[in-house]
Length: 189
Image (cartoon, rainbow, N blue to C red):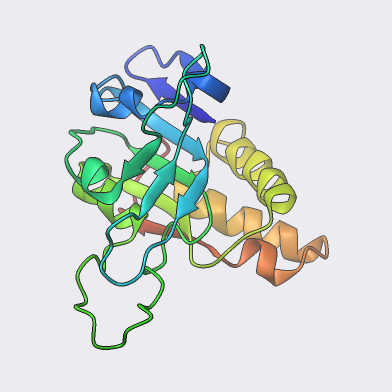
């Protein structure tokens, strides 16, 4: 799922299933989005970084195969002005998995979250390790409620969400993976 809020009126657009396409990014459709939330599968690659990215829809509405990988290089080439990108995906703020060959070159040491920052986003929320889908969904509902209902800045919203999850007995493996990169002192988007 891809959802984003476009500036300045901030209408919400949600793209799910076949509509959650790589072309939304590569064609510049999200350039003016203030907040981008991606709930997708992150594809980790060995240290080379080749093949790493976010897996979006791999089929069009007619069932024909399409390129669904939004690669690290695709992300880095974007021209974004987003205040916040939320990557509800495994290892989206972590480094690529180690190569099977320890002597392999250490290219591609940038995480997906860092790639979105390089593309122009002010802040990015991502995960350091694999996370559970159900727990992530619950955590994201709480995070967005803190952002939009309580009007907390992203760093405070994430911190409050994690504190509440811990207080409610959610295992640390479910909430501690989430980190904020970029302008942590910024205001609410």
